[in-house]
Length: 281
Image (cartoon, rainbow, N blue to C red; front, side):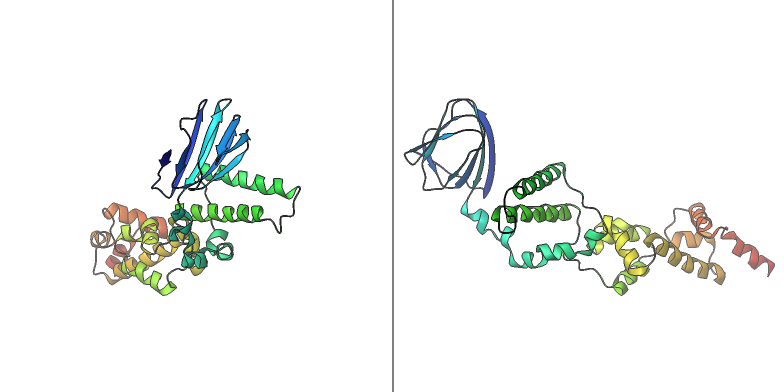
């Protein structure tokens, strides 16, 4: 008898055939076998069980089994080793403490941005909701382990979406003083204070950073950045010790023209007015 071996913790197979490609065999892994379509006989441990679309079979490493297909059959196999459910990747205590359903529900991020799902997870989420509604029509959902795991899978989809969007699941963010100090320190390097870079530095999703800043400082991030930059520029202009070319270079503008354009857009007048006022004196 053939003994099949699997080394990955989880594998999903989806195949359709008129004659099963294996003879009776054993395996070193567990397997959930879902009959998507077709009819025939499932032979398992000397038992002969008829199958049709919608049937599910549970196979363990101690079992021997085979399929005799009467019609072309599509089979979905969920194959996993004992490492899959014992893996720390899925059952880390610390991870559960930080990402349990209650903490996810209370996470401020999820009240300020909309979750974005992959096309696959979008469909899985719809199917899961349909499953809950279907069960609710004829069973007590409160005590049902089926519904419990369906609801838990919704949180799994949420968690995966948060990871894909680089949202901080712990809702731990830098102190106000720490963030402002970073901005002031790097105000002369425009690239450093771009949202995508400052968000990356503090491990905050770029899509969430603006909302986070506005919530904590009651001002738009771009507006704050421009106000602070202008304050420093005005000090230099008023001192009379710097010309526009020097200021443009210090604050990372490409040239004097770009600096003048920025200044006029934010103040309504040209920085050259300071030169005129100095000449009058």
